[in-house]
Structure formats: structure tokens, C-alpha cells
Length: 59
Image (cartoon, rainbow, N blue to C red):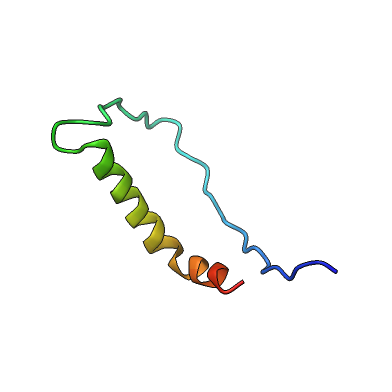
């Protein structure tokens, strides 16, 4: 017997404007260390997927 799974919602990603080119920049500077960037990324991810994490923790 299979495990019940939530049906994935389709994510619409619009085509990107290829006329806009991103300028390169330094990822790590004196103000932002790697540790700070990891904490910030975790904060964004947790805020965005908090409900999904709660649902997965109940399984």
C-alpha cells in the first residue's frame, strides 16, 4: 500500500526577460560573513515553507 501524498500545486514561472543582464558582485564582504548568509537563507526558507515543514513533521 502506498503512502498518501499531497497533490503538488503547479508553480507558474513566467519567461525571463533576456534583455536584462545581472551584474556580477561579491557574495561575501566585510559586512556579511558566510555564517550570516546561511542564517539569512534559513530564515527566508523557513518563513516561506513554514506550513510545509509543519505538515511534514506530523507524518
